[in-house]
Length: 274
Image (cartoon, rainbow, N blue to C red; front, side, top):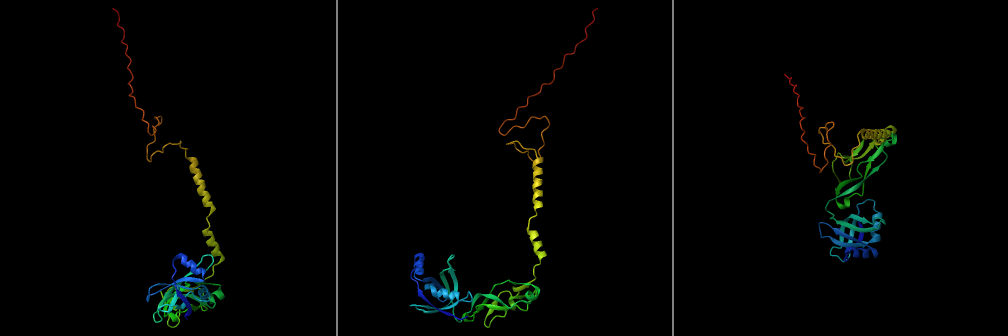
């Protein structure tokens, strides 16, 4: 990857007010950090930075920063992050990661398929991108903008794994070698699409059946009196003719002792007169 020259200036204004003033003057606030020095606030020309971003093939952009009036005027850095305005797309802030020419760095690089897979061309298969980016490690000047993979030989059911990718010289592909990156899948038939749609849809008959069962249960149950307390589970129902239970907060009626029935006096037979 070739480095691109970019002019930068030390930034003295900070906070939101300073950032707004910089953008009004056609500059973008930035910061550079790395292992070699402490983080430093910078500002770059807005048009120059936007042109670099728009003409870059990859997200990884290596720049040769020329910082004016600085003790270290030339610095090699990777564009680590670019913040855009959510509506206008205007560049708001840029993060630079300073690197050394003789030290390897690890970045994510996009994967691009080359050619048309045989399974797609002859059998109607579908080429699936399992991984759109892979992790690589290399010297800054050896970093590729992207990695191209030839898929023209792939048939249905075949794929390319991480270990199958041939990296450029000086570049090491990191990660599990058995992870699939690209694959050709069989086409989905109309019957399979219909079956998947049928499984996803909810059968209306099941909903109506449940509703009918609920209605029957509600109709069969006797309407409870307003404010009545439901009988406890396992409670013995009251005997027929028994007095109703007392309401909450009321005393139960006292049970009056029943008098035994009075015995009628037995009539003695009248004595015969002599």
